[in-house]
Image (cartoon, rainbow, N blue to C red; front, top):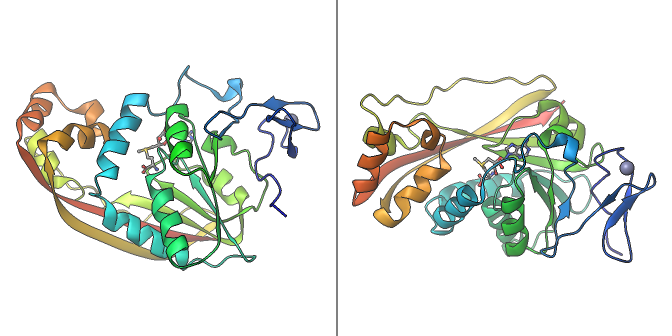
Length: 278
Ligand SMILES: C[S@@+](CC[C@H](N)C(=O)[O-])C[C@H]1O[C@@H](n2cnc3c(N)ncnc32)[C@H](O)[C@@H]1O
Ligand SMILES: [Zn+2]
């Protein structure tokens, strides 16, 4: 028997059932569509603060182009290892990727579980429809939805693990959807992350500050730092730049210097901080 629908109505929190015509409906008659790529549209109009919230189609395409070239493979492996080590409540690990983007990390995790012959139920959402569309197309076995971290359309306690890879931190919602003892894996940039790129962009680049961050309701139980040096040829530097917050705040001369580089060598460094729900 297949598992029951894991998404809940984003308007009233009621259970959703799949309709014969393919959509979802709750007891109060709120209805939601399924897109042809297989994901659900669960972002109520009231929660949309922009016509097209989240990353744009171009930003998502840049992310796909850069990530699928493999530069961040060490991050994918480290994250997959952390997920493989996380305890499941039942037989199948329930994993939720909040702000999943185009789903590159989900594919890394799914591949690692398949290789280890371990069962996992993956769910992911993002507020940007173009991101979810690409993610759902690439990993049809996963449950994807367009939704916001600040109103996750999921029942309390569903998740054994919540992933947050550079998307907004929604402490209360993450606590709500995690089971007691569940884990939040939170990626933050290490001090030297993309330092080589910042040296091209800025006269006086600075290192990212490292601050231990405590979140009420969570206890930090571990941290894994992953660092590497990558060489990015000119064909991918624009995609890398468009994935970063620097894209929005770099003066034009810095961006022009980067575009003129034949190749870019840069350190990359993530810290995966693991929290347990108290
Ligand atoms: C830096 S990207 C990271 C995407 C993905 N985790 C990755 O690492 O490839 C941040 C993502 O957060 C999404 N986002 C922004 N606000 C959000 C919200 N309120 N709820 C869910 N996702 C959101 C954006 O659309 C974008 O896809
Ligand atoms: Zn409803």
